[in-house]
Length: 107
Image (cartoon, rainbow, N blue to C red; front, side, top):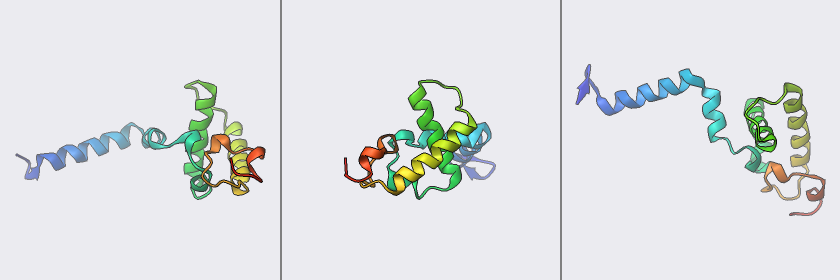
């Protein structure tokens, strides 16, 4: 079946993508983001925007709240997790487990 000369499956897929982007691409990014389960090796490779989404989701997971964490808390957490992950002995450690106890010895 065609809609205005376009295959129906293609038209439906295109419409779905447009709706997702219009309703909030950041919500889509957060939905597919691993939050606290993101490995350190992946976190340090993320760009600044992706790190912000990762840390925001991580902070929400820890607070058991749907409210957005304060911007200063997100900024401070990005720096702290970035520092801890850059010296983490186990690069596969999730950011929620990146701590001083894991810096020198793998967990």
